[in-house]
Image (cartoon, rainbow, N blue to C red):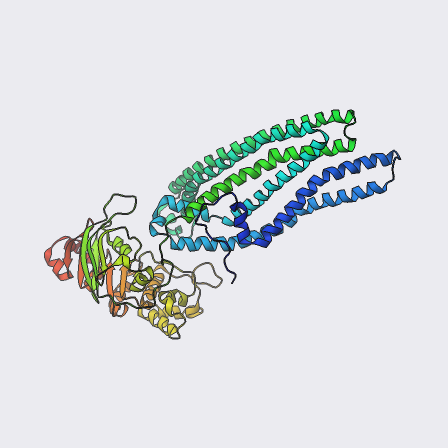
Length: 603
């Protein structure tokens, strides 16, 4: 596999990166595109001289002052120049498409790697998440645009200087005047480009919202509730509000750009007309030939039109690309967590004790204390349950244990050693999680289960372990009935794939947990998608699922707490009650009240 050439810089991206970044993605295509554009612009400059000679020799041949050989000579060169300019765009498209494909593969891979290493708090932060989305949205398009427009800008300058040199050699003062009049157009273009990208940044937030609402209105997963609750009109209104805000911002930005381009076009027309009129006087005085007059008039019109419209667009788009590179610089500087993208450590560690000691925690950017001097101990091989109302910190405990957040006060100890001193691969080898919001991987059944034992995939006994895991969670018979058994592709994106029910998907997630050899098993609402019979069966099989492990239950459905050796009842981020199910029922406290409210579910 070809080594990735594109890499994120640790220093800020600047103007030179407009060319450096595309070249890092595909040197050959970028260089070939430059040659194509250089030949095209040189032919445009050369065409002025060629056309002047062709017209002058044609005029002299018609007057019998010379033969027709020079006419045919200059005509053949003119055909080559015009012909190349006709086909050069198609030639350039070949190199542009190759660059786009290579940039898409390389940059997306690098951005994905970076995103995998980001601190978890950045994923939950709205501003940083919007930045990540902006940078990740079609980066290959930005790369091809910045290279094309950079080349265009350089070659436009060469073309301007080439044509102006010819004009200077004929009528010097017209060349100076043209140069002076072009400067304001370039400055306006720079300003418009910056405004357009700022408008795009404003629009991104609204686009993300209405795109999500559009999924709610038209997506497959919400179709049942749309029909049942009839909320489409309300959601549609919210979608329209967000869409309208984005549309107004884009409309205003595009209107300003259009007015600027139209204004530039009007100026171009005036300048071109003035130059053509001014060139008449040198012709009448015999300073330039008629052929040179026609060639210069055509060349100057093209030149001023290019500066007023094409160069305006190029500079405007480069300004937008510059803003993208600013975002890329900010993205590259986002905090990474060492080892977070590495697989679990192969070195197995026994966990004899877990302890929270006066732990306080609030989520970044908030002042609300989620955990408030929380303390508890967990011993090896025990089954523990955390219960309490929503927002009391149950799931936050699992986020801290698995290292998603490390900005807490107090101590979290594993075998008496502070959790933050362990590497992320070590923590991954310690903890295995089964969450209510489990992932659905659109790959085969056996691959779904094998993900729980990523370090043992190549071992011959892995296939047998997968089969045993499916049997443990009660899914083996159902999987065996699928078209290709364990090799059946799941989801909705592959041919001959099969989708599972919510409960089957959750059992599959349980099978992943069974495959893991991690000593601590975290079960966060593990039966949320199961029917009561499947839930009851899962509890009966709990000993098989958790054999030899320490387990942490987090559940609102208190039927699971009977399996726990010790229950922690949380209130406002600290433990209010603790004990076995029988002990807590005798206390007639919060736990007993919660359990009594659910008693009829389990009678």
